[in-house]
Length: 249
Image 1 (tube, rainbow, N blue to C red):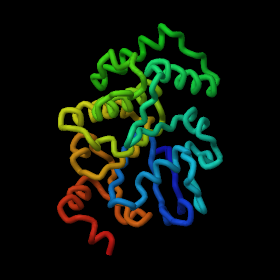
Image 2: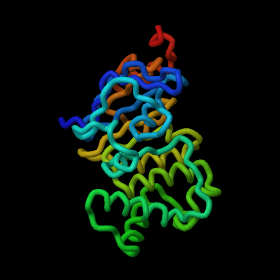
Image 3: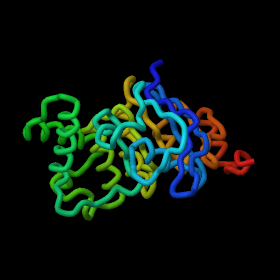
């Protein structure tokens, strides 16, 4: 299998506080990896470092994405190369149309890759098709980005954006938080529709219930900045019943 993402002995700190303390992780093309762990373990930090968010200092370690040094790439270069982060708390952008925002993002990435930009008509056809994956109300496409959206609508919008941009590496940071049973099912079905042999996914969650819908190939338990144990879905079930105390020890 082809390694899409390789993380070796990654150490990250915020200010003077170390967060990741020697993390190792490999995601092959076509795989879905789930990361669970207690609060403060470094789950969101991992997604932020991979996507290029400022304020997270990599003090040592290596991250290769498609065989290239990811840490040397800018945020825009990472996005254009196929990295997408679905936020735990999606941000509202008042005054900016959902469709205009997404078309600008898509065409910006296509331009950086040397591809032809999509016309308005071609983009609208694509957007309507992808919106159906997450049962996103067509009226929301014309609204300002996440402005006045419910929690479930924001999460559907994140997966809709992901479907339009078609990234190679999808980082889902607690996509299940704040979702009721129906919204969780719809969002999960949208994610599952995007699984293929070339795309990798890193799914960060607190709860095993998400993994009933998005079944991972590997489950990792992150404790105190390191992966304490990896296994299949049964590991998530064990943690759900026993907690993280044993892994901390």
